[in-house]
Image (cartoon, rainbow, N blue to C red; front, side):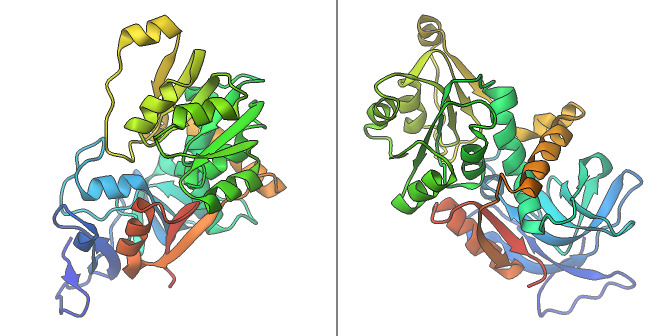
Length: 334
């Protein structure tokens, strides 16, 4: 694609130009530049989507610094998920595009495009795609939560955490323990259904988790931080307990001693939403359930911030600083 910074002339004969955020180097939020690009053209296996909203995810911040699970090639238009309208059919959809979402138009493989039910707003639908499906599969696939078990949800004020708190009882948990970094986020977790809410700072976290479960080790822990939070959490896990890692927001990886797992009959499980694409039906099943709960009013998407495209850098700053709650989105109509 040919790009120009907004305001600079660009000469592209016969090609429509669209606004997009592009990065040509790795680094801080300043590498995210508002430019104009040629509108992408779909292949036979792709769908062109007129983007209404794009999701902002921790994966975007990792790709910006080339610290993501998968390597990043430059130049890059970030953004792994969008909500909008199919250009070919006019149908409202959400889609996993892999990259290219921070733009007025994006491409997605046909099998990664999902219809949005009537009455479900774009922002709420977008919150169900990466965050909602992750939260759902933390229970059903990775954590395999059984009826009556206790569950700890770290970062409970975030996009995944706020949904995981709400899904806990419907998906089998008996006691829901939430952790977060600030009192307003703890209050949100209580409002969403947590039985106990505690500060998620690493120092003394093991003791706080045990106290929240009446002195007993817990059955399942969902952790997106890693580092010392993981270490403190593992120490609070019961025999046959599972800790599920679905992110490394701390950027500190952990080493696990197999002897410790053996002695305590414990499991450490990793979960990456992209592997669901390799097994037909995994996203469809989760989305169908999540959309049904949204429509019934038993689940709500917490939208913590809506930013115009030009403020994509600020959205990533707020996300990384954990100063926001719920789902952050870029509104391409602003």
